[in-house]
Image 1 (cartoon, rainbow, N blue to C red):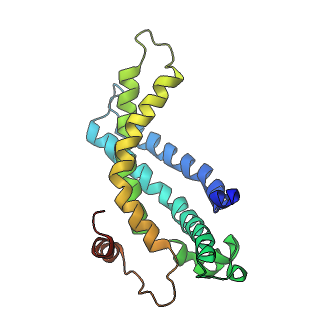
Image 2 (image 1 turned 90 degrees about the vertical axis):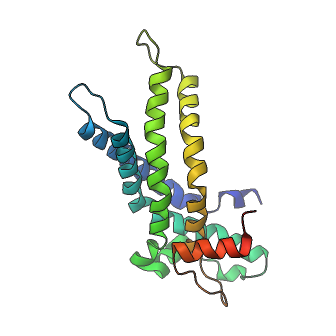
Image 3 (image 1 turned 90 degrees about the horizontal axis):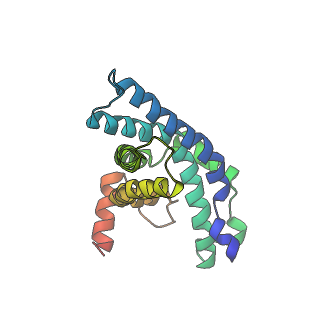
Length: 198
């Protein structure tokens, strides 16, 4: 039903505040370290700052995403008859089952997604804000901020979608009888072999 659309929301809400706080703080910290005396930053260093921010958020995002994904997949598995409703697990049971190391399964793919995303997003957003800035120094309109965010977000998200698909496949619980994926390259090869470019 309708609430199935919100499956896995709890872990997402718990993690979004610390994840965004770390990401934004790290980006600002690294940008300030890389700025010259005039407050300007060399573009490749803007990308390094964004990438560093993306890497730092994986500490929070990976455990939360693996729990969220597993909660979401359970509903589909029950619907398809692959799992009995009595087998459904809570977030806490999933965390206990995975343990600390299991919560970081797929972290390399998460890094492969989050570092390039932030390395593209943050410098592009900063550039768009400079382009849309009002000449008189008054604050930018909400519309211009939204447009700047969209211009930065679309290419960033589009370019890292393959890494997100790989991360998700690595984090889904392996079904009985399936061969577990061995990592990023094995997962990518399996997707290409079984699903192709379509």
